[in-house]
Image 1 (cartoon, rainbow, N blue to C red):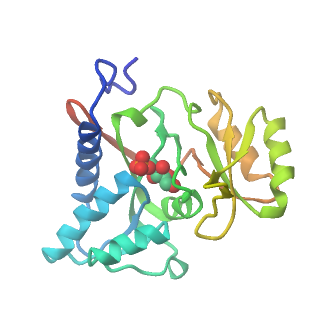
Image 2: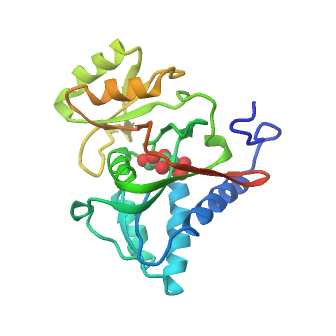
Amino acid sequence: MPAHGADQGKRRLTAAETERQKSIAAEAAVAEVQPGMLVGLGTGSTAAYAIAALAARVAEGLSVTTVVTSDRTAVAARTGGIPVRDMAEVSALDLAIDGVDEIDPRFRAIKGAGGAMLREKLVATAATRMIAIADASKAVEALGARPVPVELLAPARAFITASVMRLGGEAVLRVSSGAPVRTDQGNPILDCHFGAIADPAALAAELAAIPGVLGHGLFVTEVDALYLGTPDGLIQRN
Ligand code: 5RP
């Protein structure tokens, strides 16, 4: 079924077409950056296109400052010549641009496949405007096919796993090469599988209230706009 009007169901897309969708969404978002803005830069393969597009504008003389949502985004931004400020000194910013793992028609989203959801939510919340950028595969009618990542205090792992089970989910420790994945902050991640999420706002509040949860990837109010690359071009929803 086409999601959000993006007619993505007709044929299997090539990897190159998916990358093209990511880039047109990212470039449209970066076109909104005005001189002097403080911009939050997201994490992931779609955000990487935004960083590249912003680096090109900076090379042409655009004056901007940014904050970043991960260490790898900091490296990419600085490599591209983009000025980066310490988020610890920033209480508000003009615009945030970031990818999503899933987004529904009400701009509720799951983020954090890249493990950066804690700082991504901080930056998205501090921003006056947050633009989600994505290829058409990310647009869904209901959230929950993808897990909700939770960054946690390590000693709370069993307690949080049981709490997630009480909420109807299954928490799986994120592992890579046989070792727990650690976030940039040094914390483990539980990927929490709920299936279709009937009430994202309620679940977001329940997860946030569990002691030991440092942050989670369910975004219910932070996204203000969606720029979606589709086989038929860009769809902008504000
Ligand atoms: C990282 C994120 C990413 O924005 C999200 O996973 C989308 O990534 P990609 O653009 O590579 O599909 O939330 O924590």
